[in-house]
Image 1 (cartoon, one colour):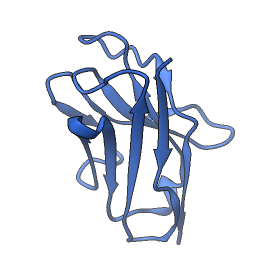
Image 2 (tube, rainbow, N blue to C red):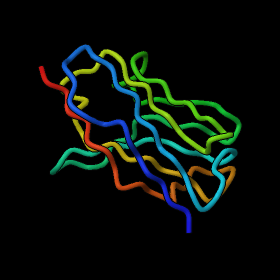
Image 3 (spheres, rainbow, N blue to C red):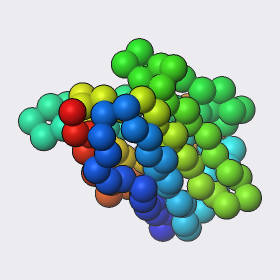
Image 4 (spheres, rainbow, N blue to C red):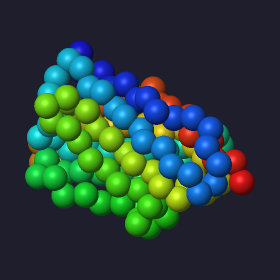
Length: 119
């Protein structure tokens, strides 16, 4: 059974940085679409960033230029480097992975890690 486990969340001041990690187990995600979503209580889940099987990245407009998604295939780990954090980035961040190599179906979800940005 594939599992995704996020880490690296925490409390940071506005303008600071955090790096989230997502370690996969149970299967290899190195050539499958993966990404990050975030959720604030009472609101819908919001797309943050994604990587295709070929390594192309896409970002939400709200994080473009501040966040960078990457992965280490040897470690089966996905990362999200978050710089210039703002209070509105406060959310639970979830790592997602796809079962299909060519379509971002996001069948697997991690439990999430809390990011809190103080203003």
